[in-house]
Amino acid sequence: MLIIGISGGTGSGKTTLANNILQTTKTTDIVFISQDAYYKDTSHLTFNKRAQINFDHPNAIDFDLLIKHIHALKSNQHIEQPIYSFIEHNRTNKTKTIQPKKIIIIEGILIFYNPTLRDLCDVKIFVEADDDIRLIRRINRDINERGRDIEEVLNRYQNTLKPMHNKFIEPSKSYADVIIPYNKSNHVALRFLKSLINENL
Image: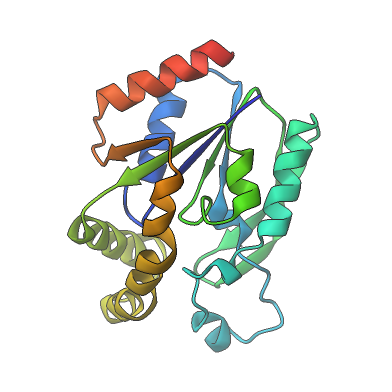
């Protein structure tokens, strides 16, 4: 089993890269695990309290469950992955069954911050993008997909997202085996990853 970690700041193109890998390798032996599914359960809080959580801080992530699930997949066991609602700022009461595969791709802004999770990755990829590109992508995504307004997005970017990026995410780049500049048509990076994956299938 090969585990590939893909990290980088919000809006850097991590998910785009992972989706390009899934589409171009054309194999069913890859499973995609997103850190976003593992935000901690906050059912005990009101919606207003949940909306105030700093979701870009490591404390917001249920690393214990994520690591447990990765170990289960490595042991050839299926997992019940949480399904998270960004509109409600909380997990739903549903889960998604994930079967073990030969290739696991883990994607998330903080996956290289946690040493145990980081050590589980055989290959660590960091996707790098300029701050203005990431902000534009974040604005478009949060407004169009997550029901936010522009004021909320910009306030969160200024007060939590950017400070947390500088404190936790950018420094984790030093753990990466490969640093990729964001480009949705980055053919060199895709060829490298496809070759790596094909060697392990």
